Length: 336
Ligand code: 5MM
Image 1: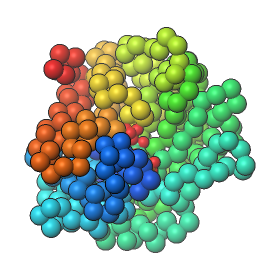
Image 2 (image 1 turned 30 degrees about the vertical axis):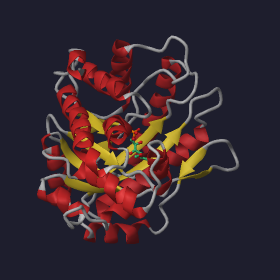
Image 3 (image 1 turned 180 degrees about the vertical axis):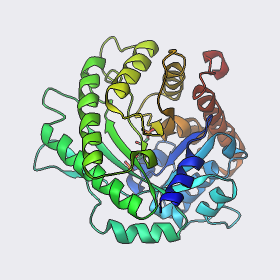
Image 4 (image 1 turned 60 degrees about the horizontal axis):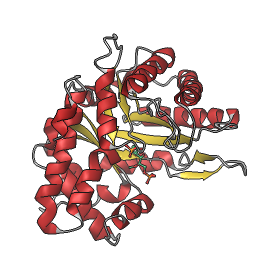
């Protein structure tokens, strides 16, 4: 089991590469497709995934893709199962295994469900060729949130999930997302993120999760989307790295950020700046973006076959710029 996990980490922690999150559940995929006026059906969702997953030379920038269950059993336009499309390109296929959000004790907060029946589902996902998993917990920032209770509950469940996945030879991606929605300041985001990450790593330790065989997918420390005087690139990069250094053990191999509603350019610039701060980073720092990699492609595609080359070009552009950002080699002029 250990060897299998080590090989997966080796294939997923590659300088200059990152992870594409293409694990939108049906509800989220439906919203994304609605934004370009396309009806969401099994077939349109397949066509949409096909744009990204068959983009020429995607493997130059992407080493892992998080899939949604439905996509595991769908085929590319060339009739090849998507996990196989990825495997052939040397990209590791992974799978979202949480089952979304549910009310938390009647409060305004939500916890993530999915532990029930997880072992059985993992057996199936492995048979379908996946080698890693992802579980996302969310926290909002306000005067009373995130609450201690939610922080403890999510930390415990993330650790149980990670442990079970490792027992099945699957590398767990642990995703605690402090949401960007709201008017909170960057310092309030820092406080919430620090508390959340501390609790997550305490729980992972308690469950004896092998940190060296796990990946963290956090949000950046950033001002709320509706905040006044939002922090700039230097402050976001500096405070994010400071917060991670204060909470994330050095034994973890890789931190792959989510984009969380940042614009594609912001997500790239922030990642790039973390690599040019001149600080020694004990882990590899990269991306695991969904929206920040896909949005320009979605807009270019508009659900039309004739737009596929333009959509793939837009997707590859973001993938390439983020790849450069993982090496601190991105510059704003490259956007033009
Ligand atoms: C693709 O979005 C994923 C969540 O989808 P559901 O809400 O439908 O379950 C999400 O887990 C995603 O992997 C990460 O949050 C990263 O996405 P962003 O858009 O924040 O980079």
